[in-house]
Image 1 (tube, rainbow, N blue to C red):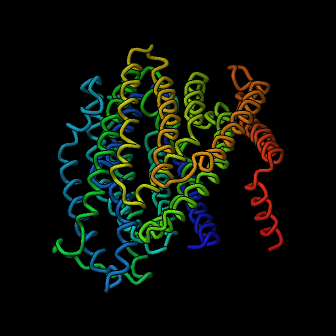
Image 2 (cartoon, helix red, strand yellow):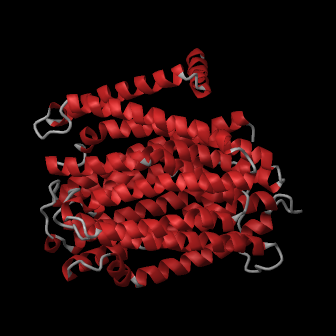
Length: 537
């Protein structure tokens, strides 16, 4: 895949992700109005239940599919049948695993909920379990979506994987709108656990699952368009699945460690449930944090991943190294700018979700701290894809394993903080560990590829420096507009908040672009050229 093709694929992926994430924001805003984002026991119960499918799926199959399918399918293309038998066997194995997992998880819903919320009352646990019974079938559909999507990506069909989530968000928005119409909004979160009826639970959680199901089933339509015909194949010997299994084993170990850390994080955050910022607040702030990562880093990284896998299969490590440096450089500049913008607009932006100043303050600072680690988070995503492309599960395990171990220690420490800052302490811990993660990972990947650390890291560090300066300017402008005081102009109403975000965003962008121009960063010239060509077209 040529660099120009990488660019086109990235833009197409980013456009789908942008639309999906934009609708996801609309969904999150409506959900916050329906349940309340801070100090809402019902919102926290739904947050725990609705994240269970992601957690269970990730442990059993999520990262394993991403880490192994694309490289394995690329390597199988040299088989006499073009890899068809290999794909059928992999898909059959995966379907068996995710089906069994979804059934088992749904039956064990109360046990799983209690594992994530050991300090909650019986009433709140019962509500979360009711949500979980409706949500846990999502495990199957998440698995199906990832399975079909990764096969499409490996065959060079990138668009469907990023565009079908649009349907998911549309279904969720419709469901939430109906929920508010029937049962009313609760933006402050005063609805008690006992106020929830079975109809309310079924509508809220049921439409969430229906959206995920539609997202997965739509991908079936695209398989035929690229000439794939699936036939179940239970003869799992003789096509070289052993190496794939080894890689999957290392990946599973990484994900299991990460999910154990996730259990600790949610339990610690749950200590503040119903009184302060807790699980749902953190999840909503993380959703905002993930927007630029999903649009830019995931789209660009997914497009590079297939080419890296092809070059790695041909033992062309110099080309893999070149792609690694290029992708890190591009992502570094984009994500540092995005992080600076998020840090500047954090408090005005959270007025879209929270209805009280305390809610805006709590969620805004959580988002600010998360944003500090955004460039590093996206950089780690690229480094992991490099190791997956190289089929080096052992090194990927080493790069990743220390992160959940150290983070778990910090999270346990957060349990001893005052309840009103537990969520903020969790955000600080996550960002600290993520920044350390990129440094450690870059050193090991550099050694694996045999390239200079200066070549790989200089641009990334410079981009982060630019981002910090721009963030400082953005936060200063936010302060001048009254974003950090209850009676401030920027927080007085939604209109003021939107104007404040625009002013802050322009200031951050001008400073960031000026720094890139002063230091003559090549990516700025590339961006100008792209804009110029698009304008002429």
